[in-house]
Length: 65
Image (cartoon, rainbow, N blue to C red; front, side):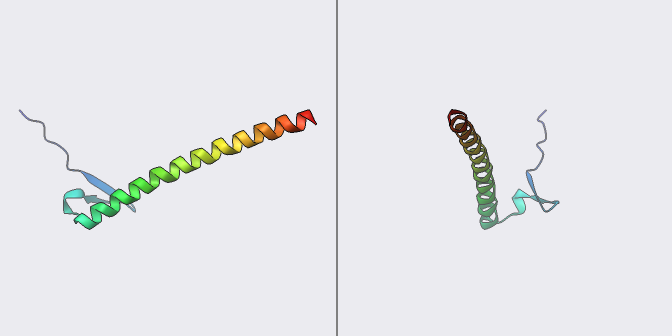
């Protein structure tokens, strides 16, 4: 017996859409949104690292003065 696969869906503004019902342009826009969200998450992570590094070196500098 083969397992029945659940149809792929995406949720936008709390509404679920079947991927198979989307046009190629809509799928492309979904892909852009997902990629941009990953980039935003990565940028936030990088900013946290930069702020932490800055604070560390500022503390080292102030302690040496």
